[in-house]
Image (cartoon, rainbow, N blue to C red; front, top):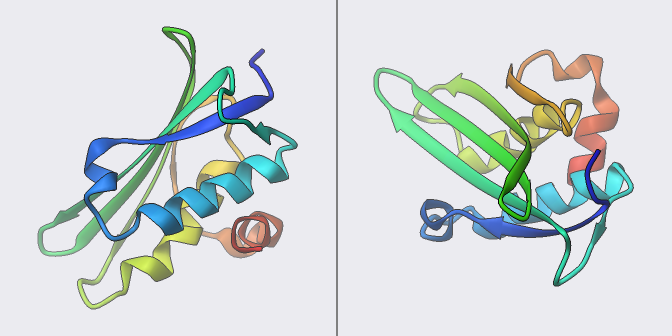
Amino acid sequence: EYSTDYTIIAEEELKKSGYLELLTGYTRNAMEYLKLKEEKKGKLKIYISLQITRTNKMRLEYVVRAFEGEKEKWRVSSSCFARHSVDVREILPALVAGALAHIGQDKQVKAYRLDKFPQYVNAVVK
């Protein structure tokens, strides 16, 4: 069980990236889809982060963690690999949608086969 009122807090690394606004918006849309309500002093603190690792392919990982006070309630990470030529902004909705089905659980998921769950993608990009 966890509170239904929340506030989103971006991790420092995300704040320095050019994806803060987009990822925050997609996360907010996902929470609204789950009937959670954003409040400035929400009891549920939702921390979001994005890690991009570049090797022979680009690996992206979106992590969303929820805390009430000092206690972590759940953590979901959604990841994928892409070519370096892919625009990261085009992948962000899929990463958030991949995590959406698992909010409230501790889970690591791969963001693929989202064609099976178009409602999650639609909820994120609404």
